[in-house]
Amino acid sequence: MSLESPLGRILGHVSAKKGTGHWWTQRLSAVALVPLSLWFVFALLGMDSLEFASVTAWIAEPLNAVLLILMLATMLYHSQLGLQVVVEDYVHTKRVKVMTLMAFKYIHIGLCVAGVYAVIIVGTTT
Image (cartoon, rainbow, N blue to C red):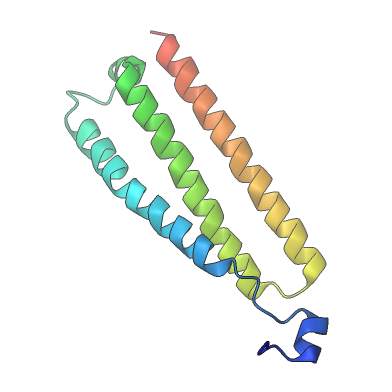
């Protein structure tokens, strides 16, 4: 027995059963960002100076580079999840919604690739 109306099934106004997983993923990425952000802030505050040479030397340390890449990827993933919710809630034209979601996903992937590339290049130039 289903609680869905026949009209609701036809029009697609039924639950997709994906909201809980999305919600948990967004919360887990937020929880992961807390220690990563604290590490980043305390690492920067602990540096003697924020000059280019000292920051590039700091990024060149393997642990710092890995944590920086992890923070960047997690932050962009969390951002993409949040924007997805906003678009799904407030954009009502299906075509515009799909195009916007695709654009945001590709933009976030591009930003992540560019950020990882930047960390690798800056970390290996010292």
